[in-house]
Structures are given as C-alpha cells and as structure tokens.
Length: 226
Image (tube, rainbow, N blue to C red):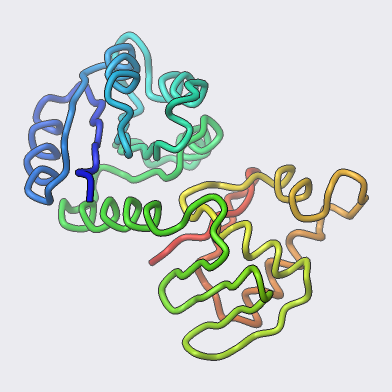
C-alpha cells in the first residue's frame, strides 16, 4: 500500500511540530507549510491525500486557501479538513461552504485527531466513485441488487430513498448540498418541494436507525462515521 501523504498548513510552528510528530508515528508522509500561498504551491507539487488547514493565517487565510485548492483539478480527490481554534458556527459553515470535508476544533486531543484522520483516509480508500458495493461499518449497500443491510438485517427501500442513501455513502467525507442532491437523485426535470429531501432523510433514519446522517443547516447533508 502506498504511503498516504498529508499536508499541514498552519502558521503556528508548535502545532506543526506536534502534528507532524504524531502523524509520522502513524506512518504518514508529512509535509508542512506556514501560510496559504506556500500551502497551495506544496499541494500542487505533492498532491496530498489529506490537507489539515488552519483558518487564521497570514497572507491568505484558510477559507481563501481552501477555495483556491478546490479549483485545482489534480486535487479534486484530496480531503481538506479545517483544524482551527475558531469554534463559532459561522466559521464552520464558512469552511464547509469553501469546500472542506470536515471541520475540527483545535482543542481535540491528539489521539482522537489521529483516529479521525485514520478513519477519513481509510474510508476514502475503501469507497470508489463507481463502487457497486459499499460497506461502512455494519451498513452494506449493494447497488446492483438495490439491497441494503445493517447489522445483518435486510431492508427494502423505495428507489429514491435508496438512491439518496447511496449518494451520501458514495463519499462519506463530502457535504452534499441540497441542490446537488435534488439534481442527482430527482433530476432536473422533476419538480419537488423543498421539504422532500428532509422527509426522505427522516425516513432513512427511522428505518435504519442511522444516526450518522448529519444535517448542516443551510448547506446540506453528510454521512459521517462515529
């Protein structure tokens, strides 16, 4: 297996040192940058699997940096996770709107952060864009046969509920915006009410007992793994 590459972008040298030490112990190939501009250039050079990005930095802040990174074609599969001291809701929403896959507050303990990083990169390796069979924990989604099982229990879902679940599960590190969900699940030719997605999400939670479908107010939905 190829060594996973992680790029750390933060202007605090002690943070870079601590993160580098802990992630290298896990076997990751670590690169660092101390500002947004330097981070963008390094990302172009190494094409990392994951970028941990601070919000408040000199020259170019994390939000701008994330927006620019998302415009680079070669980085479209790269996970971008904000690691910031700012915990306000508006900061987190701005991060997701800029294209981040996740937002972690810096008070998190190193061991928990490492676990999150491991989970993010492991899931990315397991689920491809065109996967016919998706396995996330005890949840199994068989696209060819339209079958869903959880902890060994089989579920028969209506097509739209199945399509919605499959879409969310196809990229567990992505926040799917409501507009994208409507387009991919219902199509541009179908007119549905604004509450349609909410109703289908609620039904999935009720039927499967899934508590990992996260609602990001004003943005969309994300399937997370606890």
